[in-house]
Length: 302
Image 1 (cartoon, one colour):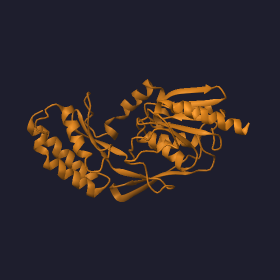
Image 2 (cartoon, rainbow, N blue to C red):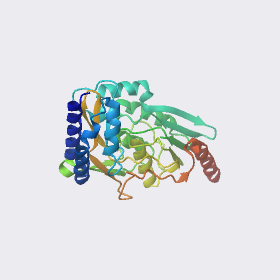
Image 3 (cartoon, rainbow, N blue to C red):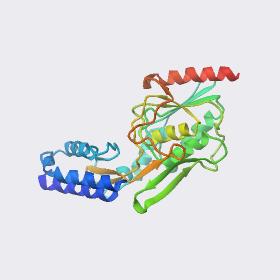
Image 4 (tube, helix red, strand yellow):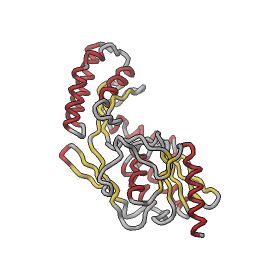
C-alpha cells in the first residue's frame, strides 16, 4: 500500500469510530489519537502490519478488545457487513462445523456435555442444530455446557440456548443500549422452543477460559447472574460491546462497538473484566472439576 492509501484508511477508520463508537467521548478521543498518529503508520505497507498497529492504538484508550482494525486474507464484500462477514459465509461456516455444536455426549452417571464451538451461530442458520443437541440432553441428570473455545456469536442464539436451560417462565437476560438513537433492546428467554427442555432445576455448569469471549461470555454471565449455573474455569476475555464491521479496504475491516450490554441483575456487564468463575481452576481442568462437583451434587440428592 502507498502512503496516500494508508492515510485514507486511517482517516476513514477514525471517522467511523467517532461517529459510531458506543461511548461518544471515547470515540472522539480515539479518533483524535489515530489522526495524530497518521504519519507513524505510513511505513506499514503490509495490510496486516497496519491492522496490528492501528488496533494497538484503538485499544489504548479504554482497552476495548472489540475495537480493532481486522485483516482478512480473502477480499471482503463491498457492502458493510455484520462483523465483516456476509450471510453466505456464516452459513458455510455453520455447515462445516455442525452449527457450532462440537460435542454432545452422555457420560457415566447420566451427566451430559455440550460443547459450543467455534461460535453461537444465528438461530436462522443453526437453530435446528441447537434444538437437536438440547433435545438429546434434556433427560440427563446434570449438564455441562463448554464454551471454553467460543469467542463470540449471535445474542439470539444465546437466548435460544438459555431458554432450554431455564424454566417455563420467561426471564430477562440482558439489555442492550445502542448509541444510534439511544435505543434500548431487551433480551428475554423465548416463550416456546422445539422439544423438551433441560429445565431450570437440575445441576448446570458452564466451562469458561481465556478463549471465551463476547457471545460465549454472554451465555455464561447471563446464567450465572440468574443463579442458574455454576461457572467453572478461568476468567474470560472481557468483551461485552457488540460491534459492527465496516470495510475500509479490500482486506481491512474496522470493527466498531456500537452498543453496550447491561445485565438487569448485576446492573453492569463483563466488559474489560471478564466473567469470574464460581469454581476457579485451569481451563484445561475445568471439565474434570465440573464432573467431580456434579457427581457430588447428584449423590446428595439420590
